[in-house]
Figure (cartoon, rainbow, N blue to C red):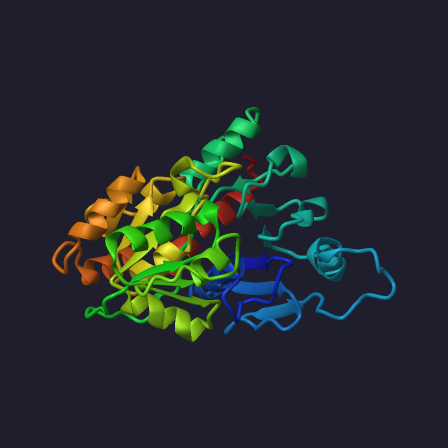
Length: 343
């Protein structure tokens, strides 16, 4: 099958630093489709990497566009890929924020990676990344057909499995209230357990950096190698996303890719019950889905080496959330698109 994947306008694909969840998903999907024998073209920002068995079309880079100084990333991205996509003889899978391929190609599908209002972008063949997101999308577009769901998958070889863990709990996300950083700091303060905070700066960065707790270490953004080391060594990954309903505006976790990165490393996940988390974490098998701060605190205080098996975390991720499984799920939707089906 001929497939064109349009990555986001944000940064290069695959990403080289902390930021880049969408680009990571697109890259893992691209390489999995290539490995399954399909003819794949990746459209991505300048500086991106060509697929191992596919083609790359680069769009724009950091340099200004003197001909169109008022254009933003969406317009510049579209301008570079428009003619290629218009004549592309295959299925187009658009992961960009603009989703403008719908204007020029009648066999395009669109994965929505965040809380994008479907009425604003007028998408057909929309794909959600979780049941929680699909429910939200349908509530905002009640006349639409049932939106299919394809959970993200990852290339597990990018993460190191370790059975023997070090004695620290890991918070790895935006250092912000809406991702649960405030509650993670409170957990460190009240349990006395060693915590490492890593991730992009947010509204909790200064409080955590200057908290003065001897059991808290703040390291900020890290490289991909450091990311893999942190996940593989952590005793557990702490993900109180949504702040147990205590953030404004309310936050819906549409997926939470970091949970897969922890599981691939053999590291259990202690998550909130926000959004897609219960779809990803099987309670008591690969972690604990907590409906309150008090419950998460209790599990951390009671946690021991026998509660969650690291090998189970890794095998569970391989079975349910591999990039190959993600590619196979999308291939079913590509086939429907090739037949002209709408949803």
